[in-house]
Length: 219
Image 1: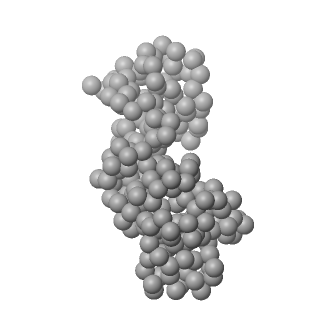
Image 2: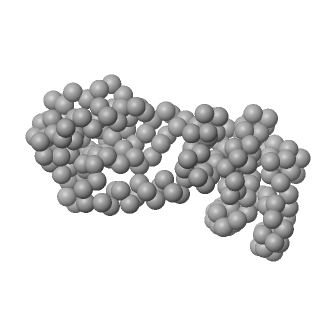
Image 3: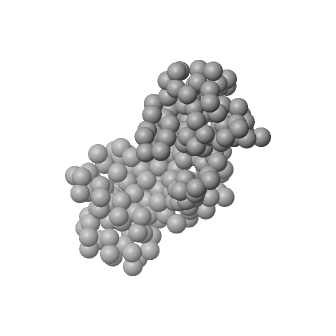
């Protein structure tokens, strides 16, 4: 597999190193001369000095034959531009973008750039997951499929507590995929009885969070 990486900072450099360790071919584009020199010493001809938002630079990197493009610069606007050029001009289906500022995620979504990775949002989800009384946590957005995965802790006194899965009026667009009960992980069946404290993993369409919360959390 051939991967073009736009951005040779820590994220891009580590990504390139790990891909090469798995015998993948990489080309890393970096606009900062000092960073480029470090990349050149490590990756030799796999490192290119220049601006990845410029078409000729992407072509020098071999974008026409790339299997994947990863835009991991420290500038969200650049990452959007790079992915849009890769997708629309060169037909790269797998263009992955780094989101530095979570407030910019909407811009990526509106412009159809993705999948995206945001370390801040991922860290927040992990922190919320570890909270003893977490209620509903967004774990993963599958934007291309227009789905998201959430975790909800079933509360005592909620409408679903003590009921079988097939007795719960789950709305269309919501599917339960696992239940963590203590140290045991269960695959929900229709006959599975839900208990307070269950950590339930669900996949759902965006906008269904409130209906899910209404079933599994107290009013």
